[in-house]
Length: 114
Length: 112
Image (cartoon, rainbow over all chains, first blue to last red):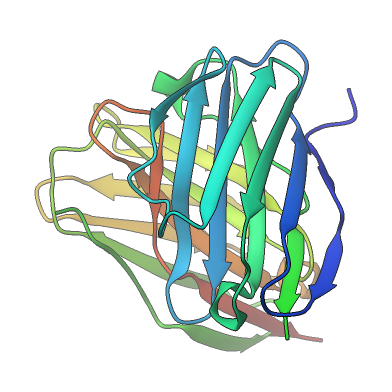
């Protein structure tokens, strides 16, 4: 298996633009997590899905952020409109049994909003 | 509210030295604790997971211990090598859910 695949690896955009980050979890995994990592706040959970259903989105900073998981093999995180403070590395992770917390991370998307 | 703290934020040691990384958590009612490694520009890789009923876990030169009552875990790295240079993060789950609460990590540099 290729592991968790995220795209793009790097994204540079201007303030106000829409940004879409993509994630393909490991085949067979039924939980998917979106995290954001910044120097100031470290790694924080934004939202996680179980069996394609959002379970906890309390970490989503505001209405500008939205996440979808239309099927078991694909998820998106969208920011509209983007702001400079959204600049961070966004990670996607997946797991088979969320109770065991064995999460496999993608390489991340480094987002820069100018 | 669970908080995870890692001290020091950065550590530099000469090759061959044994070292200890520290992790503390405020709520001792955890299901498990996990140590991750993060290389620059890469994602996280799970190193060790200690269940709440366990005291320690070992993998090669790595040994992680857990003391729930004191809210502490340590990651011991024996005979450090330059290839061990990375950021090490610890994490605990939020209740029984799958989402993890991470410390900010310790950036380790092993000098040849």
